[in-house]
Image 1 (cartoon, rainbow over the protein chains, first blue to last red):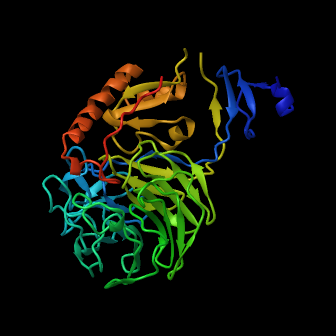
Image 2 (cartoon, each protein chain N blue to C red):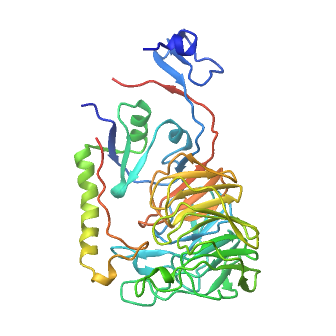
Image 3 (tube, each protein chain N blue to C red):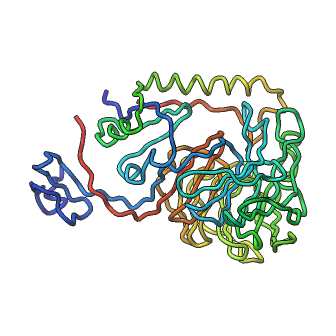
Length: 341
Length: 101
C-alpha cells in the first residue's frame, strides 16, 4: 500500500497554525486545534439557499435574461394532488437577492409558460390556462404579456398556442422553440409536440428555423440569434443539445443526464443546466457539458434567471417555494477538517 | 454497520438556510416533509443541523415522514380515471423515495 510520503513526497507536517497557502491534497496536523486537516480539490460550483417564494408552484416561468439577484417569477400551478391540477396562478414575484415580493399579476393565469427578459422588462407567453377539464390545467394559450416592473400589458400572440416551450432572450428580442399545442390532459401523442421556432420582435412572433426534433420541456440559454436548446421530452427524456444562430439549429454536445423540464441559464457558449426532476447540474462551454455541484432539492419546471456562474432556480415541481442560488466554480480548494470516530 | 448519513427535519427559511460556504464543505440533500440528509460523523454537518434547529431523525423516522407524504399522493394518482393517469411528462405516479442509512 502506498504511503502519504510516497504519494505526496513529504511527511504530514505538525504545525501550530494552518499553512498560509496549502496546495491541493496537502495534509497537516494543527496542534492548536488538535485537528487533522487537508486542502481539498473543489472545482465545482455549489447551490445555496435563497429566499423562498411566497407561493409554492410548479410550471413557473422566470425572467430568464435577468440576474441571480434581480429576477421575476410568474405564473405556475399551485394546487391539487396529484399535481399538476387545480389552480393556475397569475401571480408575479420579484427577487432582490434575499427575498421575494409581490409584483403585478398576469392577465392570463397559466402554467408551463415561456419566460424571457428581465425583472423590469419581462415577457410571458403561451402556457396551460385554467380552463378545461375539472381538476386539470386547461386550454393551451397563445397570449403574450409584457412586464414593466409594475404591471403586465398585452403583446402579440403566438402564432400557435404552446406550452412547455424553450424560451430565452429579451422582452423585445425573444425566442420560443418546441413545446406542445394540444392539451395533454385530453389528447396526448407524439404528434402534439412541436419543432417550431418563433422569434419575437416586441410586437409580432414570426417563424424561425425549425428545431431538429420535436421537443417539449426543453431548456434554453442565450439570445434570439445565439441560443442553446438542451434536454427535453420527445417523448422520453433527451440529452440532446442544439445551437441556434438566428436562422438554423446545429447539434452541440450531449448532456450527461437526459431530462426534461430542466432549468437553463447563461449563454450559448457558457450555459448551465440544472434540475429536470433531478438534482443534476451541468455546465456547457460551447462544445461539451461537465458536471457541477448538485442542487439541494430535485425538481422540474423552475423559474430561472442569471448566468452560468450565478444562476437562480425558484419554485418548481413537485410544487415547492424553495429558491436556490448557484455560485460557479472554480470556487477554489478549501481547507477541510478530518472528522469521524 | 457505520452509517453514511444522518437526517433531520427543519423548515427552510430561505436565504442563509444553506450558505455557499456550507455547500462547499458537505452535501445537503432535501426531501419532502422538510427532511434533510447530511453526512454522518461530520462536525460541520452537525453544526449545520444545530444552526437550522434541526430535529434529528433516525433513517426509519425520516423514511416514515416521506412515506406519509408520498403514499397519499400515490393513492390520489391511483384513484384518477385511467385517462388522467399517465400524462408524461406532466403527470406520472409519484415514485417512492428510499433513504439510505
